[in-house]
Length: 340
Image (cartoon, helix red, strand yellow):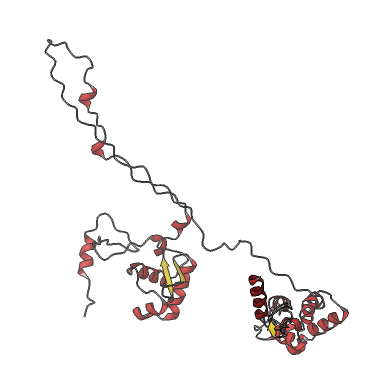
């Protein structure tokens, strides 16, 4: 039985004008009127993207705005696995076609917002201002050959009464030019790889490096290789790290605590033990222990108590800040003075 042939393609191929190439692909381009997406050659022929990445880029570009395009959403929609989809999305992120960022909604929920650009190279170019509008052909002045060859001097005619001047129509208003879009400079959201990095904090140092602190710090750093062979330090590195360990000892940190902090949860392997130990001594430096006066609670605030006094007249006890007479004796003295 013969293989079925597509006669429609054969008929369309026969209608193509001009000589056809002897080999290679032959395009039969039919104009789309609905359900189509414009894809640029910079994406379709990108030399650094894999075929899977180009295919997923076209599929994402064809989806309506607001469609979920996460790894699990694409795996549920298409037959490719999650690993292939994740690798394709990472390629698109590397070349600037895709950007994924976590954002917080007004209700407090954190979601991943995906932005797709069909031509990321255009974002790096400065945006040019809009060109000035041109008048349509109907509004341009047209000079015919008859007007150009018309003589400027006309033959004299018999004098006639001057006719009434006709009102001339107002000239058409010029077309209003649309507002030109201001050229916005491109703002890089991610710092370039050559941007200067912030300086690292210095290694902590004690207030006074005593011989005892230096001896204990040297022994602790030299003995790290007995607990973890990957922390083998050279003699020069030990001398440079001694002030950092002395600062820990000065803050009443036990040597076993320092050794545990420097070696716990270390990566496998530790390629640069000196940098690793220096980083932990600097970043994990504990605060100094509080003194006895720092832990003493403040005294409770009490209301002042007025002391007891003995009346000079009737010897009755009463509260007053200074000695004197009680209230009854003061009233009697006031009545006697008023009567007199």
